[in-house]
Length: 299
Image 1 (cartoon, rainbow, N blue to C red):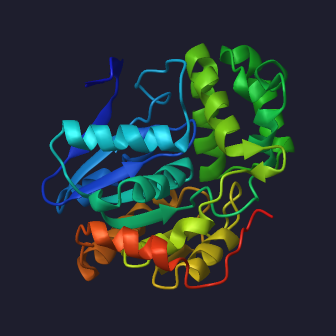
Image 2 (cartoon, one colour; image 1 turned 90 degrees about the vertical axis):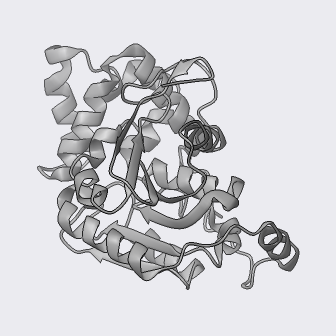
């Protein structure tokens, strides 16, 4: 479909209450292809290609978390949906938390999957993307067919990637950066959330605002991109949340074990009541402030 004069693509299936699936950086809605059929028997599922990703447009412009959240809201509105359970993986987790912050009245539940925005630590391969001239210097952001495939493999090996789902999916995402517009959108997105020290955007200061929102945190114990310790940190900051650690999974638990992922997600939705829309709740929460000492995990 077209939003604001730009192509915005998405996958959809099923019927029932709405579940939105948001992918990670340099990925696309294809990352959910094993999960969507397992959810569609119970829910309407929408998995967009975020702007700058997949088959969606890749214009110059705003690739901030806030801009992504706005577009998710606009997509829901254009498709006639008011509220959703929002599920975000990696960058998509940061977008999901921003969506909850900006549009709490549209959120029934929040599910964070190996989400960004919960700690400084992130794999050096992503920190390297903010080095000045990265689009020229780093082979994995200038893939050009078979000529640089060998260099890409060696680079990923030096960064510690071994044969695994993390390797395969990261490979697929980097190969997609062969398209110049995709490469530019990727670099703009990375620079909005990461600096040379790691993740620069923290959601930890505002998580208390979601205190009544049913929330689940899912992580792979072998995550090579964002450490699993961030899952426990998120759960500590949101003690009302449910936490699920997949022992044999990496950064993509929905790919390592799509059957368990779908089962856990469906069980969470069945076991929780959607948070009713209530404009006074946000106002009261802001006035009351966090119920724990303020802390910034990035300092």
